[in-house]
Image 1: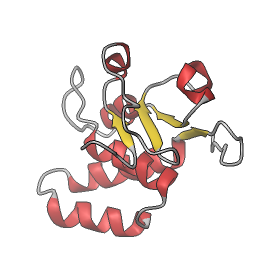
Image 2: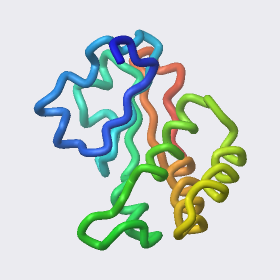
Image 3: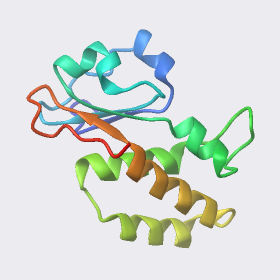
Length: 131
């Protein structure tokens, strides 16, 4: 992908090693798995930036193991919130239909991330948080 609409960073450590903004469209969102708020990243000055502590959310719902939570569906909940690309209910329903094990855990984690994601925009017009 050379011109992504949005970027999800499942591991915050990648930011120090990869330019996650390469090719990102101006209106695109960067969603980072982090316990830090968007303002703690320099990226928030130039990009639409969102953070969510997907690791803690996934762990609290028993997705993966304590030492290695699986954050995929949790992060998608945050992405849906910031982009509005699909309704949360439709995402939750799709998770229930496609994830054979622990579907309810994944659905709950997705809802939590949707509610807990923190957002920041350089223009300030889409800044929001629910916590």
